[in-house]
Image (cartoon, rainbow, N blue to C red; front, side, top):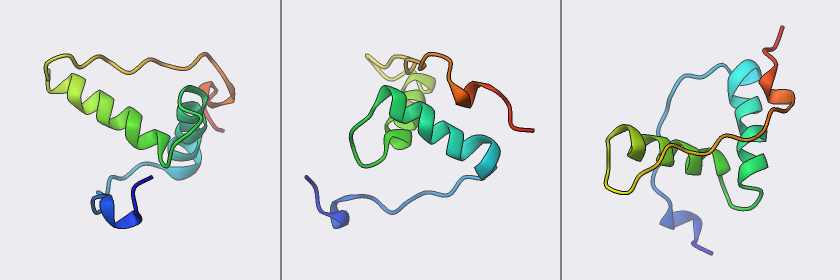
Length: 72
């Protein structure tokens, strides 16, 4: 397993925590139950697909779950 120093400095984006970021973590864990940061894996897959990198595919979505219902 890589040491914490092997990871790049985190990038900042603005995402509402309670309504999007926290539920996104649960959805990402449904697809990637192991690993340090499943959200990062999904975001990287999306970025590579968005930039049309060779071989990149749109990330697979998890089945519907508690994260599928918008927070009130």
